[in-house]
Every structure is written in C-alpha cells, then in structure tokens.
Image 1: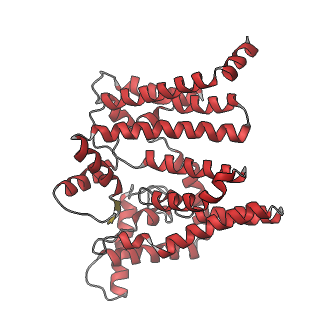
Image 2 (image 1 turned 45 degrees about the vertical axis):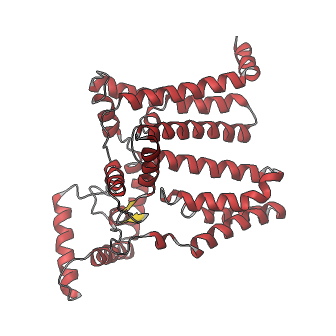
Amino acid sequence: MKYRLLNFFETKHKLVLLTLLGFNLFIKLIFFYNSTATIVSEAGSNYGLLQAIENGEKPAFYTGTYRSMLAYVGYFFKKFTGTLDTFFWFQALISVLSVYILYLICLKLTGKKIPAFFAVLLATIFMDYHLLTPVFYYQIFEIFFTLFVVYLTILIIEKKKIIRSAAILIIPCTIYFSVFFRGTLNYFWFVFLLMFVFTFALKNFELSGRLAAIGITTLILFIAIPHSKFRDIERPAVNDIIFFGHTLYGGDGGEGSFVYEKNRSLYESRLKEYMIKNNLDSVTVKIHNDFQISEIKDFITKNPHRWFLLQVRKITCTFGIIPIRDNLELLTTGNLPIKWYLSALIIQIPYIII
C-alpha cells in the first residue's frame, strides 16, 4: 500500500500538484468571501492611504511609519475593475503562486517529489496563511518576493545557463522593489556576500563570482537610488519599533508598547530629563527619535547581557506568539456563523497536525 501510494505521487505528480494548488485557492476564496472584518491589525493604514489617493492626493511611498505602495496597487485594481475585490483575488493568486514556488524549492533541495508535496500540504492546512487573503496588508507580497529570490538563488547555484546572467539583474531588482512593500530583504545583499566568501573558500570561483556580483549590484542599487528619496520628508518615521525591540520598556521585554504603567512613567520621566538636559522646548518627531536612540545606546552599553537576553526572548517568545486575535475576528465576524471556539479550533488544528 505504501509503495503503491508513493508510486501514485511519482507518476501523477502534476495532477496531485494542480489539485493541491486548486484546493489552496478554493480555501483562500472561501475565507475572502466569508470575511466582513475589512480593517484588522495594521490594514487600516492602507485603507486610509487608498482613500487619500482616490481623493486626488499622491502620498509618498514612505509616509511617516507607513508604506503606500500597496495602496497604489489596490487603487490600480479598483480603478480599472470598479471594485477592490479583484485586488484580493490577485492576492489569492499570488499566494498560490508562492506555494508553487515553495514546491519548486523543496523539489530542488531534495530531488524528490514526496517532500515537495508534503511542503505544499503543510501550506494547504496552514490556516493563518489563508486568512491573509482578505487582509489589505503586505505579508502575502513579502512571502512571494522572499521565496522568489530564494528559488532564483538555488537556480544560480545549480548553474542554470539562462539564469546565470539574468539573475545578476533580476535578483537585485526584485529585492529592491520588494522593500517598497516590506523591509524583509533590505539587507539580503549581505547574505550574498557571505555566500560569496563561503564558496570562494571552497574554491568554487565561478559561483562565488556570480554571488559577489549579485550582492554588490544589489548594494549599489540601494546606494544609487536610496529608498529615502521616496520618503515624505515632512512626515519622518517614528522609531518606536526599534526602540521597544532594544529596550525593556515594552512589557516584560520586546513587546511593542507600554504594557505596564510603570514603564510609561519611567519613559516620560527620562524624556523630561532629556529635554531639560538638551534645552528643548517641545517634542518633535526628530527629538522623539533622538531620545529613543539615546535610550537604546544607554541600555546596550550599560546592560549588554540584559540586551542579549532580550534578543533571545524576542526570538523564542515574543516573535513566537501566534497572533490569533485578527484571525478570530476574521472568522467569528464573517458571513458564516462560526463560533469563537470553532474558529479557535480551525486556527489551532493545523499546528496540532504539524
């Protein structure tokens, strides 16, 4: 039975893959049409920017803490199709394409179809990923760009003739463009330079040369056309995310806000001392950021061991928390009568299975 099943996957792999990808799309569209909670988490900023564009404004790609690229993409779909629903269909298709690229990556890494199918299966039962479809936010694009760059990198390592030359431009341009959506790949050029050093040490000079060319080209692109050119200089970004991530002001460490009143009081007291010390009258965004940077430096220099433990805590605990609040809202407030306990079960069962 086992070998018969494995043989079926090997001989009918295209049919199995298309079925799984089709089922992926079906689940995503079910969640999209069920959803009535249009503004969850940080999606509200994109709806606000979209409305500004529709009112004739032209917000910069970087406006304060927010990026407006997704709002422009949404505006494009809404203008030419008359509805924002087509944008969410596009998100669903991009999401399914990402699953297909995941399949290709696993197939390249293992050389076997079964592990690649297993990766697609995991993506199929991962409800959090499906629930991103009706959310007007960047994660789906972020995942797509990351997987695409990883796949192209594998093709380069495999010495694919067409890719060898094209990737020197395709990968840097993809990385550069992806940062307009989210900064995940902002420093990926450094990864290519590390791979260059590693492959050069192994005396694989042809591959190391290509990796160095990609890393250097990407870095030059960011230097020649910095993303700061696309920022609204009158609305600089606040430093809060970095600040809370590198000090103990956020909850028990690493949370992105003042969870405890004592931390807020300490922050306000320290800010007042900073203002007096530097003869400052009012708190502007620049002063706000400068103060937070000074607090980060002070904490790292005086408590390096506590800063290191904070980073460990962020990775193992804070970043490991499953953000189920938005998912529960998307399910329980939808068109289908799904109770909160059933919604929680739908979200958590995949983790139990995995």
